[in-house]
Amino acid sequence: MVQPALACPASRLIQLQSRSAAGLQPFRRLLAIREPQGVVFHCSDGQQPRDTRHAAERLRIMQGYHRAPERWVTVTDAKGQPVLGRGGKPKRRNEGGRGWLEVGYSWAFDDFGNVWELRGWGVVGSHTAADPDGRGSLNFRAHGAVYLGDGERPTGAAIEAGAWLVEEHERRFGPGFVVGHCEVSSAGKTCPGRGVQERLVLPLGRPLMPRPGGSTASAAGVPAPPR
Ligand SMILES: [Zn+2]
Image (cartoon, rainbow, N blue to C red):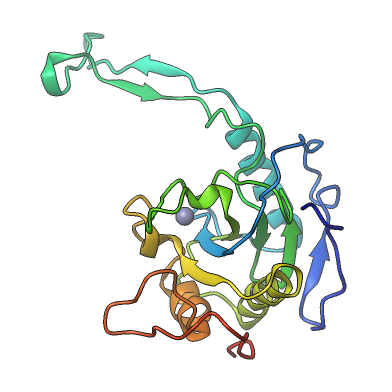
């Protein structure tokens, strides 16, 4: 179910930005998510955007990297000899991109309150391959929202932008889970950053799996955005 992408946000702090506003390459049509069940939060862990224009530039770089083909090269030492890895095989390293059809996330948000449309609503992602509860990869049943930066100290505007994405998800698809990447995959490790996790994800109390010593609150109802 692909729905109209942009709706009016309730908060004056939030500014919705289209793909063309970010100067992204034209979108490639992808599979629809049949029944979206929740949102996985991520961080880009790259440079912290200085302003809105810089955030758009970071998104263009991200899209280029995600769409560029993989390019595997043999790792060599100072003498140009192949470095051997486990099993005595030459080590190889990807110096290209990810080889995906499109930028991996559904939406991005930043410290300036911008909510950037990437794949948008109702489209499968390339953000969370994990299947933590045995019901299938989250790429095919969750939207991926990426904070631009390391996610350690998001601004109030960023938290509000992330909370708006959760509210909009609920308006369109009904109540669902809200998790940080680190909760559902060891690949996520520190993603979406401590600040995003503690100020945005955890206060919503909508885990996919029970949290250790934490909230097991149901996914029904969206609390007010944390301040
Ligand atoms: Zn992540």
